[in-house]
Amino acid sequence: MSTDDRLRILEMVRDGKITPEDGVRLLDELDVPPAGDLSRTVRVNIRDAGGGKLQVALPARLAVSIGAMVPEKVRARLVARGINLDEVLKAVQQGTSRGPLVDIKDAGGTTVEVIVE
Image 1: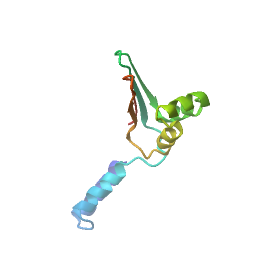
Image 2: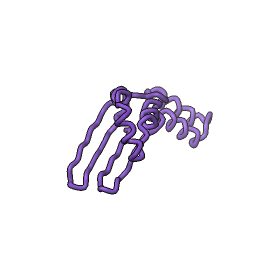
Image 3: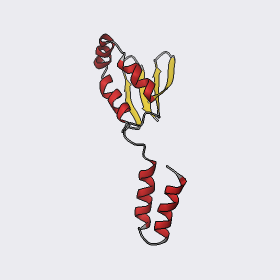
Image 4: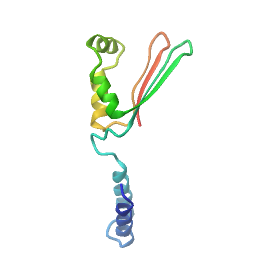
C-alpha cells in the first residue's frame, strides 16, 4: 500500500468525512495481501524426537510449484499422517491463509509445521 493511500484516509478522518473507526478499518484492509498473493514465504519446520531438525523457507510461488510435483505415493503417506497436500497448496496459492497451515506431532515425537508468512 502506498503512503498516498494512507494520507488520503487520514485526511478523510481529519475532515470528518469518515469516522476514526472507519479509518482504522480502511487502513487495516489496505495491509491485507490480495488473494493469490504468492510473494509471501512458506516455512517448513520438521523436528524429530532425537533433536534433529530441518528448517526450509521458500517463496510461496516456488513452494506451490514444488508441491505440484510431489508423487502420489508421497501424497498418500502425507494423508496417512493427517496432511492433505492439495489443501495446503490451495491455501498457499489463494493467498488467503497466513500463519500455521500444518502443525502436527506424531506418536514418535516428530513435529511438522508449515507456516505462511
